[in-house]
Length: 237
Image (cartoon, rainbow, N blue to C red; front, side):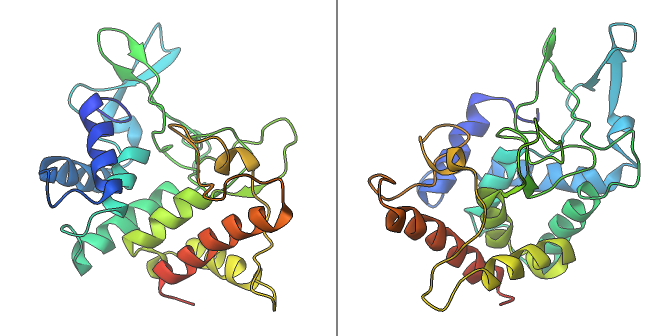
C-alpha cells in the first residue's frame, strides 16, 4: 500500500543506513520497483482506483501498487536491483509521472483504503511530479502554495541521481545542470532552498550536517555538499 506501513518505513531506514546486506529487505526492494513499474502498466491512476463518498474522494483498489517517497528512498540507497533494464523502467515511470498534459491527473494523489480512507503521505501524484516546489513537505508536486518562491527539493533530486535515472530524463538533467552551474569560482553553490528541508531532522526533512546555521558559511557548506552529491551521482556533469 503506497505511503503506508511500518515495514515499508522500517525498510527505508535500513536501506538508508546501508544495512541491506545484513537485514534482508529484498521483498521491499522488489515492491518498490514493482510500484514504479505499475505506473507504466496502466493508462493512469484512474484505472486502479475508485471513488467513494458519492464521487467526492478517490481511493486505491485493494492490493494495488503506486510509488511513494519510501519506495524511492529504498531504491536510492540499495544496489541489488540496479541493471540497465530496471533503471530504464524507473526512468520511464518517473518521466510519465512528470507529465502535465492531462489536467485531471495533475497533482492527483488518491488515498489508501484500510476500512476508511487514509491520505497517502508521500505518494507521488498521477501527474505533476516535480523537484522544484513551492508546496509543503513531503509532496514533490507542482502546487503553488501561498505565493512561496520555487525552491529545489534537494532530497528527491539526490535520490533520483542515486538511482541512475538522470541521464534518461531531460527535465532532471536540466535541473542537475542548473545546480552545477550555480557553484561559483570559490566552490560554493548558490541555489534557492527551503530552510525547513534541511533544518530540524524528522520524517520529511533534515539534510543539515553542520551543528547550526548561525554562520552563513555553515549553511553554504550544507547546501554545497548536497549539490556536489547530486552532481556526482547524476554522472552527467
